[in-house]
Image 1 (cartoon, rainbow, N blue to C red):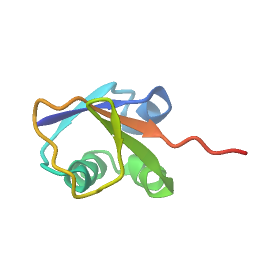
Image 2: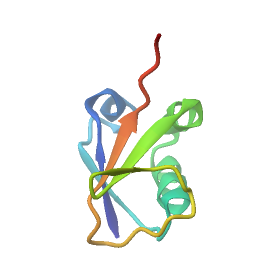
Image 3: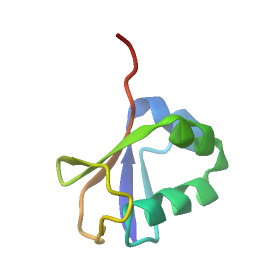
Length: 80
């Protein structure tokens, strides 16, 4: 299981949970599992989120994720 820490703006889409445990071994896998567990997150994830793994933003959806990795899901900031 991988623990995903949710940024405060995303928690309302997941029943106000701060940390959610899901099964998956890639960035795409954990995002898919997260949406399966909390479908309200789908529009937010489709609009764009940043995934931080061990303090680094990861853009490769095939990047490996392990059960001891520190994962944060952050709503992408927009503006100009």
